[in-house]
Length: 79
Image (tube, rainbow, N blue to C red; front, side, top):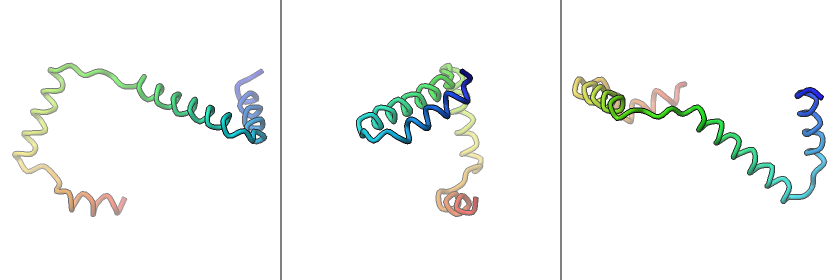
């Protein structure tokens, strides 16, 4: 059985489920899967790298290379 067929089979089965507990279990499984997938992509950062990023951010702030919150909100609302 290929994966696409299995997905369709599961979707059809899920459409017929009326037990709230089963739906909640599936939702928990889905959320756990999403979380684990996201966490697997995270890469730890060394303290040296972290400090370098912090130093760069502080330097940019001192140079005025920042956006104030009001401007950011206005700009982001136009995205």
